[in-house]
Image 1 (cartoon, one colour):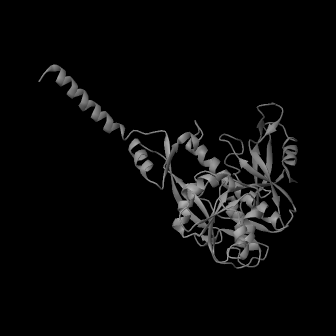
Image 2 (image 1 turned 60 degrees about the vertical axis):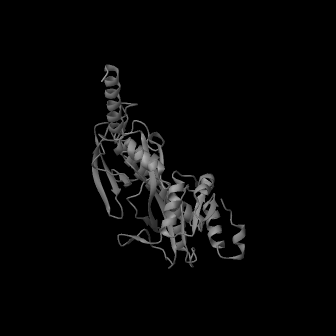
Image 3 (image 1 turned 45 degrees about the horizontal axis):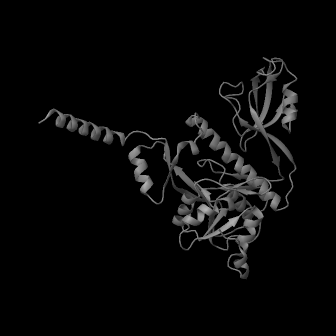
Length: 346
């Protein structure tokens, strides 16, 4: 065999080996696939997903399903090619889903906090829709950086009730009370975790990085409105803000007589703010496929997602365009009535 032929043969074999090996190399893409659906009117592990204490609730039927998307955490080239050929999945650049440079722990924390925020926003939007006014505000721990003086003593979601025996109801009151001590001195923080009783913990302050004379306990807080009764949403294994609309609809349905769904299975998605404005989300096509698999006959689509939703809509699934909570409620109530033709569609 000529030397040139041998060289070409060896090169071809090496190229083949490298090509095959390359199929298992990681690629900077993630796969989005239809995830589980959860009925906001139902229960999770035997406990009502939406629980109301101190206010009458009403029985209902049908389902109001929030939809989710599952992500493939690590994807190789072969997996990406297989998923790209699968019509139910989408392969997208990782940077569109995960911020560059962020660790998995940071991403998980951000998604968890976004879900908690969406529950708060949904509650305020629903109660505002029903004309129920808040009775006050509370200070809630938003985040606790690693190495913070409060790390291991306070948790994200704790409600701070007092500092050194003085009640606090706002972030300004919290700062004012902490500022009464010197950096390095302890403050006694009263807090409530979940539905438990108020507890106390001592936190040693440290100097602020911006002003060495200013004491801090190293937490980020937010303010939450209080109402004459308690609404709790028990869903901990889903991240992100996209369930806000369905949470709000579930709260309204539980607090009002009658059956909002008319016995139907209605799925949907969308962020929501305290004014009831509905915002677009990611993975709309995979969420629609998840709704189809659950037997939903109606899907509530944020108006900003309508163009993508129409390309994936399966036969028999009605797509309703929504911009606000009140608009979504109006549309759902018109289903099966002579006014159904006026429902905005994608």
